Length: 352
Image 1 (cartoon, rainbow, N blue to C red):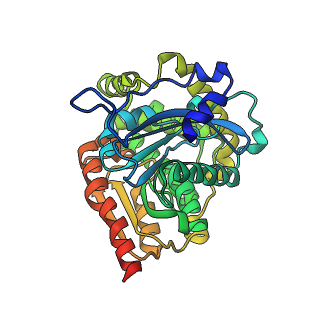
Image 2: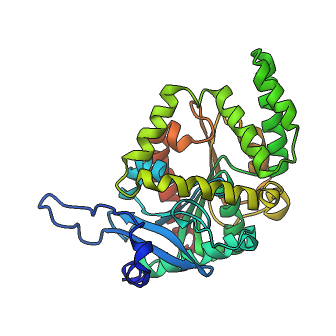
Image 3: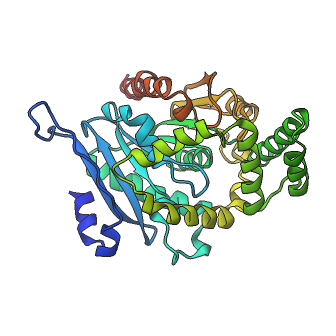
C-alpha cells in the first residue's frame, strides 16, 4: 500500500510527528472492508509533506482539501467540523509545503512559489489516484487554497472531476483592497479609534506578509473572532483530534509566518479572472454572506465571469470566511447531495 510504504521509508524522527488516526470499525469491531485511514509523509516536490487519507470506502470519489493562508493548516478544523464527508468521499487532508506538520526550517524559501505548489499538488493527485484506483479527484479550495485549486484544475482538467471553492479568490488584489476598506470603515463606524488608527498605520494594500497578518488580526477583532466564546470554539476544534497535539502548535505558528512572508507578495497578486477565464468541469462556489477576508462581491465577480460546463453559487447566510466551520451541517450535506452527484452526471453526459 502506497501510504504505508511511504510511512515506513520516512526517518524515525518524522514518524514520531505523524500522529495517529482511528480506523473505521464495523458493528463487530473489525475494520470495515474497503475503508482507509492512513497517515504518511509523502515526498512531494523534493520535501516530505504530511498527508492523511480517510474514507469509509475507497470506491467513493477522492476529495482533496486545500487549506488557506498560504501556510495555515486547517486539518484540525476539517476533521472536527467536516468528518461526515468521509462517508461520501475519500477525504485527503494535506498540510501544504511549509504548513503545519509539513513545516521544516530547511525548506528553501526560493521553493515557496505558486508554481511549486501546483507541482506539489499534481504529485499528490497522482499518488492519491494510484492508491485508491481512481483517475480523478474533487478539489475543495478555501481562500488561498481556492487560487491553488483553480490554477490546478485549469492546467490538469483531465484529473479533476469537480471544483468547489469557499472564500473564493478571483482578482486577489481587488479582494485585498476591499477587505482593508471594509475593516477601516467598520472601525470608524463603530468608534473603535485604536483599531482605526492601527489600520491607518498599516495603510492600504499592497501589504507585506507582516502587514496583512496585522490587518487580518484587526479584522478578526472587529468580527468578534477574538472573543472568549469564539476562541473556545476554535480551541476545542484544534485540540479535539487524535491526529494532532498541542506540541504541534509551535511549528504550526512558525510555518504560517514563514509561508505567509515568503509567498504573500506573489499570492496576493494572482488574478484568476485573467489567468483562468474557463474551467472544464462542474464548478461550485460556497460563499459566506459575511465574508470580509475575501469579500464576497469579489468572489461573485469571478463567478459571473467564469465559463464552465455547469456552475452553481450557494450562499451561506450565517457564515463569514469559513462556511465549513460556521455552517458545517449545510456544507457537509451540500458536498454529498450536490457536488457528489455532479460527478456521476458528468460521467453520464460523456457516455451519452
